[in-house]
Image 1 (cartoon, rainbow, N blue to C red):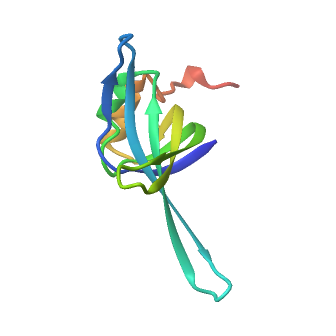
Image 2: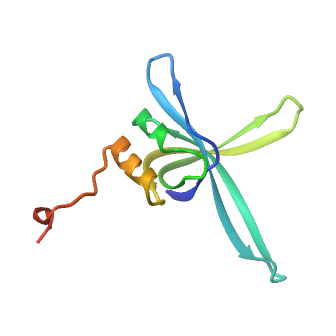
Image 3: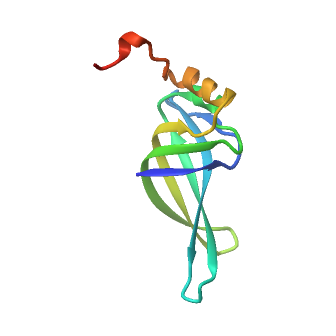
Length: 125
């Protein structure tokens, strides 16, 4: 599954007891549609995301960054201390692509090991 949205706050790296690291961040996606009365309805969905492949991406996952994520979504539910029932969406991210130009894109390519600089000899024909 792919989602495109903006990072809602700076990502954080968490180290687990087995010394594995996970990058946790949140992404908001926007959608709009018209209801039967013809009114435009705006809907925002929030995803709690986890990225396990490299902690280096924490430097590029800053608040407001537009990203496209590939991965798997799962739902979770819990009861708060006040007795209210809550639900949320988790997104286990396997690939991150930036949709913003400039310095952040360059940083992302360096941090994730992506190199989009092609030379003439790299052409497939």
